[in-house]
Image 1: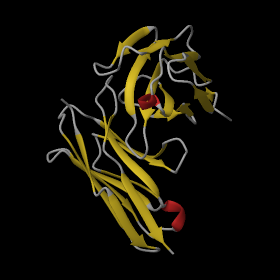
Image 2: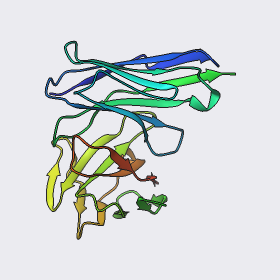
Image 3: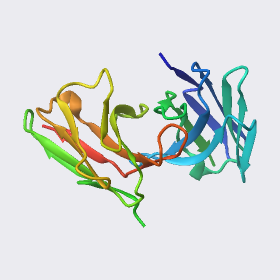
Image 4: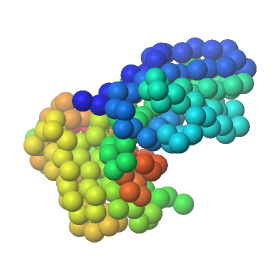
Length: 111
Length: 113
C-alpha cells in the first residue's frame, strides 16, 4: 500500500540554525505534498504545500523541495526560532485520494 | 473566524457508553474526514465522506460509525467506547479531496473511564 517515510523522528537545533526534514513516498501517482505543523494539544495547521508540477516553493523562512524521480520531498526552515518548536508532519496524496502522513518529526529549537 | 468547528472540545465517557462527536464547517467543502490521533502519532484516517458517499477505511473498527445529514455537519458515533479509544478526534474538510488543502478542526479530546 501507499507509504510515506519521514526522518528524523526528533530534531534539536539551536535558535538561528536551519532545520531539514525529509520524506519519501511510495505512490508514484502522488501529486500533492503538504506539510503540517502541530503544536501540543492543537490542530495540525498547513504551513506549506507543493504540487508535482513544481520542484521548489518558498514562503519566507520555509521552503519545500520535491524530487519526483526519487519520490522524495523535504522541508527546510531557516533562521529557526523557539516558536518553530512543534511536531511536523509531511503527507502525500493523489488526485481524489486521501492524505498519507509521515510518522512526524518533533522539532525542538533551543534559545 | 472558525471554519471547522468541533463539539465538544473535551468529552469524558464511561467504558461502553455510546458517545457522539460533532463537526460543522462554514467552507462549503464537499469532503469531510474523521481522524483519530494518539499521543504524537500521525492522524489516522477513520473514514471520509465525498458529498454523501461514505468511504470507510479497511482497518476502522465496526465500533465507529459516521453520519453526514447535510453538507455542513458530520458526526462520529462510537457505539461502545473502550479504553483504547481514548484519543484526540480530528475532523477535517477539503474542497475536492486529494489535491487540495485539508482544513482541520480543533479536535475533541475523548477520555474513557
